[in-house]
Length: 269
Image (tube, rainbow, N blue to C red; front, side, top):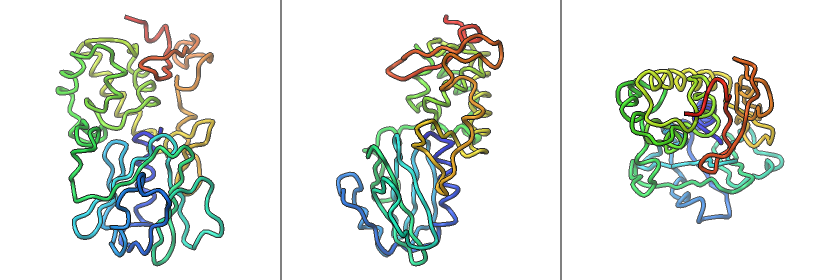
């Protein structure tokens, strides 16, 4: 958390606020976590892109600002200076006509300004798979990758077969595809169902701003929650009935991640 839908929602809401603006100041007290951000001073933000769970601010002079929200990072925007800093503010971008605050209760997120596309040291970003909502997420390569997996959910979380799928959307996609999280060496038919499910789940989640869970750690930049939690079939619903068959949703830990599934719809192989 946040995953692709939350980061894409953030990107879309920041775009009209940041693109075309010049950074007048960057305020923070942690140069190790927010690396080389002084290089942003005086630079215009030309574009905001997303790759998987990363935001990429394209700056003047061939620079990129990479932002990873990790578990609890997010943004708050205002057209006027903040009267009081938002809770858990860790960094503030001062623009000529407003301010944007980066908040992060657990301080796991990071920023780094570096030359354009020089991301080799950021292993996950550099080696990430195709974007699930783009044409590059083709069925046949995905089927080939899924035919080799030892456990499908950890494979999805690796970001290599497809970008941006984290714990929430892995559980939701596997439920829609009726595949157990520990299924291995998926058949072509299973992989096709999962490919379709990932696309559909991500599309629906982006449309409603992502998922805000009970801890409220993620909110949209305008302070509103993401409403996809209301559509969750299994995630964070342990002990509740499966919306497809009525069986009780179960939770266990797989690769140290809380994992939700329906034992009837997703039988263990």
